[in-house]
Image 1 (cartoon, one colour):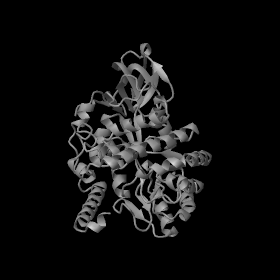
Image 2 (cartoon, helix red, strand yellow):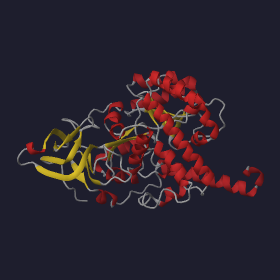
Image 3 (cartoon, one colour):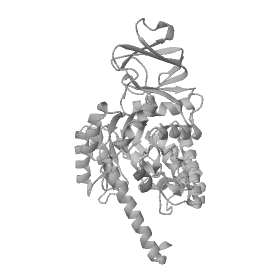
Image 4 (spheres, one colour):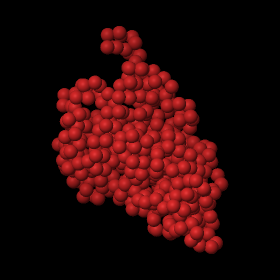
Length: 448
């Protein structure tokens, strides 16, 4: 694939406006040399002899960061095509994801940050991508070995004994790693008191705002009785603010769940580049009742995110790709839309996927267009700082000074993925689900 520009020599990228991660500059150019931003200057001050790339009517943003991804190789070019130049993988076997992190520069992939395996209890829900921990000693060993491998954070999961968390967090912090958690029965507040730095998905909030709630998962937010917890939700939001924990709600996943159940999934255009196996493994029969409950759950989740935003709780943008058939790259723009609906301004939403995300991840070289930062940027037609577009018109993605057109990236032949960890995991979940459905079909008593 022919690149539009390489990182040789000085290149000036310009449009109508440049958002540097903090402020908007009109009629400026981003100067790039050697894959690094050297300066951001008025367009009429671009040095003579620089190569110029000007797109009138567009906005230049820092390259986007998706903070919650389960990486599969087929996703790489799609992320870049939609301006996502960095991802954080939140759960893959350690050696596998470290190998992928080591080769991203040679591929048409985003930069990869990773957390290694998901640390779970003795019987992991996702056995292929989790590391089971049978007791506190085993959990501490798992944290230490994961951190010492050089990951960019450590992820805890729902099956861990909450009593283990203080020790696990201490071990994380001793290795200068942040601890992130998909909380569940123990609740978010208990994880926060243990020192966990970030929580995912919001379902752990159920334990805090609705004690004794029915068994289930995220769609419980759509049950009528959940509306009665609003006063308690305000109190929990206050406690979260006091604890200084960060939230990554992955609203795009919630959005996908009600859409999948409408019968037309997410639409053929959204899934055009998604492998057919991934669609088959996650497809569910049309179910208007369940779809409506998931839609209400999304609204309830957005309401709670709004409470967090009112209290200035840090909220980051992550999509949970490929869970829920959310397409890579496009999914992050949908996440930004949903965060804006929840109460963020468009600029704040973009910061949640650029400068704010980079700050949490401890990567000052990312998420900004300032001297010394990585020359990662996305050129978008129009002004997403006024309104997050439903279908962004991406003109160009630049990564480390190399520019690509989306259509060229989407034409990249996908790598084989059927033996990758998450492919094996999705296939196992699918086979178990089909097996349960077949069993219920033979025994009517089990269908209730």
